Length: 115
Length: 112
Image (cartoon, rainbow over all chains, first blue to last red; front, side):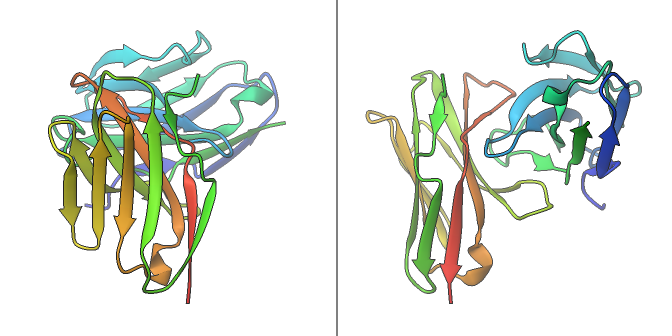
């Protein structure tokens, strides 16, 4: 297993465009999380899936953001009508049956720059 | 309002000495804490966890101490090695929550 894989690694887009990121979790992990990290801050929780069900969403996840995990395997995060404030590192993480003892396994992230 | 604080943005320590990274939290409902390490261009890597029913957890060179009454935890690295140079994040969750609140991180530099 190669860990949590995120694509693309970098994305530069013009304001107002839509972008989509993909996350492939560790294959046996049933839980998948999206976090966002801005410069000088720690990761901030966006949303979480258990299998294909989206069970929790942060208030940070405005209606321009949508996440899916259609077959309980990979996940996509789409941002519509991007704004400069969306520029950040988007991190995906996965875990088996919850992160409380062994934490999540994070991917390397997708860095989004909105110009 | 920042619920998890790491008040030292950076810390420099000599190789072989002890590194102590501190974390304070405000939410008394937090009951589980994690420490992560992050190298540039990589995602955070899990280091060690502690539940609020304990006051200490140890894993090799890494020990986490929890003082619930002070709402404070610390990560001790002994002995420090140059490869430990990274940004360290403390994170907390409450009541079997699935999401963690992260602090802003402390950049540790271990000097050879």
